[in-house]
Length: 509
Figure 1 (cartoon, rainbow, N blue to C red):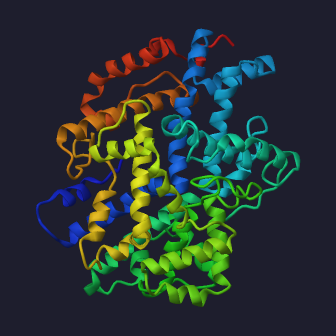
Figure 2 (figure 1 turned 120 degrees about the vertical axis):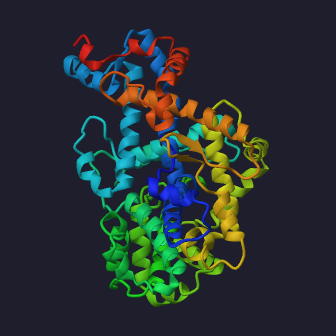
Figure 3 (figure 1 turned 90 degrees about the vertical axis):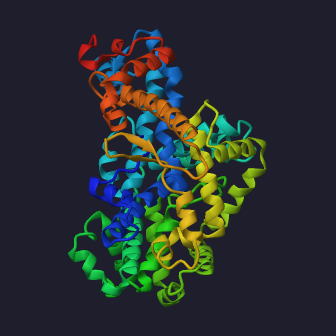
């Protein structure tokens, strides 16, 4: 919920230094590049965009239910714990608002856990009360995120996927006991999840950058193993990829295995079966959307003709990206993730999107659902440029140091993360081209006023103990002076002082 890049002091110092280029500054930039790729994953990839939206969207959808609980004098924290104790005492869950809040929370939590690492299913299925099936959890993740954007930009579903038509189809899968969509499902899981894919994509672009800016050092693959950059979660996805392809770790960093791996990462985190396209395959809703399952399926398809794919990836060009994206999506039975960007760009013909992109250009957004307006505008801008230059975004670590023009750097600057921590520990807005300081801070403050409220709501639902208005990660030394504003905002929305929401230890049970 913080949406911020955090850097070590030494790295930040190098990036801010007046010296033009030093080895230390290049190394520092490689870390900044790595962290910005994570921003792209959250705001620019189809799966990451939905996942990043899901928790703040859940906070928004919880407003009405929380107000009704307050009216019923159910003013306790956490509500998950309250529900647990109430259920133990009464043997039933007969408070409608509480049921909705707890079920939505667990549906999203289990969707997130499964996507992070499919192996989490072994723990998830132990929850016989709240966990229904992965298909249901994923459906809630999709519909929860799409709904907030429909309320913000497309109430008639003129361009967003028509999620209201989905329910009967998912119910049919449940009735027919299609695997993954009923309570007693068996799950064919992948050996990795989105966390390993994210870290693999970021670190391998980082090492490609370092290899190219330090060409005279003749760095080889094992150098990054020995200096501690490639280990654990950072190399997990690549090692699984190599195992499927029956290949050893490469010696040279020019090996097309690395470029091909990065392409697989990119395609894996950009499913389109339900967003941005409408669902075209209900039965395979899980398999065609889960990044880990997609990753494994793509790697297996490559292994059947790996020489062809490796030869293609000796040229990390736009045409290579388009050709292989179309082919590999087809191999796993999906519509092309690159081609579906064109469908997203067609959304720009709608009046609400025209207005939204004007707000983005001015860096000033309407206040209602402001963070979601910002997210959606940045997602659209990312798609615009990725459609024209997919190879830059897929292989950014290769293209920045080998650029023959300023185009790649300009794209990187355009899509850099919006917020970063500073030397004094506070979060600050990142300087944006053609945006004055007053506008920059107005949007920054508006964004975090909303997200603090979302975070309070999620803590109310899921975090035990009294509220702790500890926002030093945002305000640092100004935390105490901002606490009254947070209290006032909470009371404005819910009609009670935040201190009236008591810890579960003070419940009547």
